[in-house]
Image (cartoon, rainbow, N blue to C red; front, side):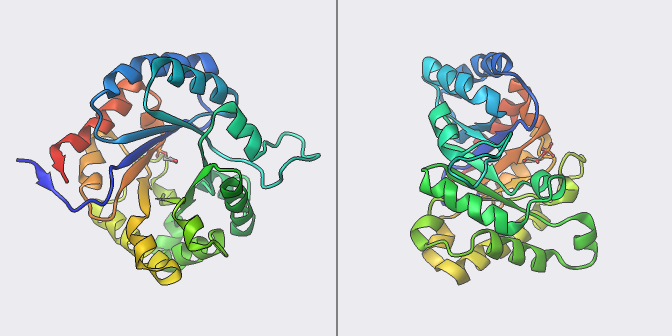
Length: 263
Ligand code: 13P
């Protein structure tokens, strides 16, 4: 019996490879995945390491595959003396079409602030890279009943001063920090509640129309076993997958979970 839901768009499932895979390994992955996607009912993208962007983008073109290639971070400056940093236009010229910004590993391990992330979001938009903006509370913040406040603050600060037109380019990802890489996935109800809140926050800041069209992904311990229950939720429009995106077979199994859900 197919499940029904009122979805607004084709879901977008993005693999975030973090610091895994060389360019050659990315190409091998794509050779296995691409032929499986011909009838895919979901949009697919992969955020690969900087050094794999160029090769992965070339491989996608060669395979004529419908897979967007993106980056996992960037600097907010156009160019300059910032040893080890990467600028948006470099990512674009390498073949990236999108960039993950504000991932919790950037916020917590590399101490990036929402203010800095806001500058990067603006720069990405200026350069024509679509941002996937991540927000999410820690386990302690959830236990203290601060989830709503944290999401509100991170969302408003990270998207500060964006116009409605710019907001239409944004993809939002709700990633509860306690669910990332832990195997402890948020329940579909918990995730849905957070997604609904995010949509309401966007509606109050940028209007209902922008909020309705906003694509919001869930991320944190997504696996083939839990993907369908998440995707069926009204306000979940896609998934941001870490560990389970590293093997093409497992990633494909996640993509297939949408097939039993009718729009
Ligand atoms: P896991 O799927 O490994 O929990 O990682 C989630 C994530 O951080 C995606 O950006």
